[in-house]
Image 1 (cartoon, helix red, strand yellow):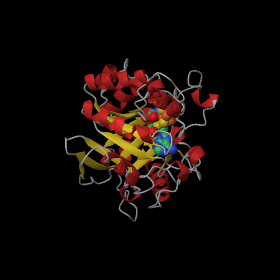
Image 2 (tube, rainbow, N blue to C red):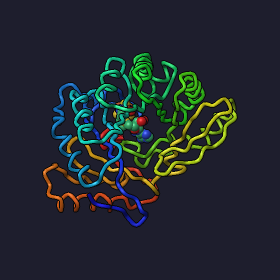
Image 3 (cartoon, rainbow, N blue to C red):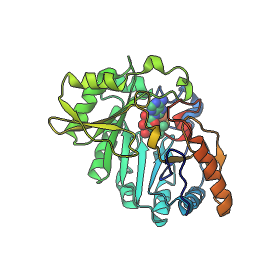
Image 4 (tube, helix red, strand yellow):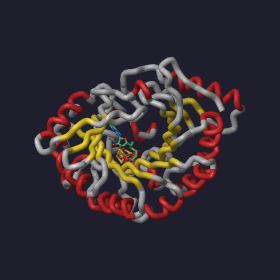
Length: 317
Ligand code: SAM
Ligand code: SF4
């Protein structure tokens, strides 16, 4: 095992694994809405054994604490349970997933039994028309049923809501009301300059302060202490509900980011903003692997979030 830290003391403790780079929704901040992005049913997928081999190699060097499965949409990955079992067999207990929950109702219990601990569900609206505007898909009810199935299965659930000015900022209070009613935290995300929004995100930005001002029209709240390496700042309402804000633009979390990313083609990246792919086979010698991890660490150079032409769907959000 190696101790890999950069000049800011940042190491790699959390690995985000993108299982595939296609999706069954077409969120307007993540995709251009092209056919290619939703061609998930005929795209080849990397076998679970290859993915677990790469994760095992990284774990042997880094002693990973947490794995987050993401994509694209991880529930479209055919061997999802096998990947979870494979990661558990490596001795990593903290296995999480980020999902749009469209297919979660029928999978939640099996995934929990395989060893999944928690799921962050992306839900940007609680109103059907607004959901359609944000995701280019109807059937909001499928996502809501997925959330309820995950809660019933005993998974820890959080909601992630990307807020875009003029598109869904009227959904902040309904989303918070929904989260409070279901006793789960919700985190509001400032939109990030990724993919087709690179160089063009500002007009859509609804800032952390805008979000707080909106919530203050209905709730009194206090700020909670920030946990190290957390991406979100958290607040608690007087009634006990908890909400977070990931202020990617207002308050970037780069200064203690401990994340390493692995994409569906087997490339690692140390940073969202500075993301030249570093190919990983999983068969590297200790020295080769160490060199690749050093390269990834050098990517983590910026303390300010810059963005990237690569979309979150590709690199794994
Ligand atoms: N499909 C899954 C989902 O939506 O939860 C997992 C992949 S998605 C790329 C992961 C996260 O990235 C989601 O919470 C999504 O809202 C977020 N995301 C994607 N593009 C974004 C952007 N431009 N700005 C902020 N968040 C973004
Ligand atoms: Fe799909 Fe997630 Fe991107 Fe939405 S944010 S298009 S659900 S990958």
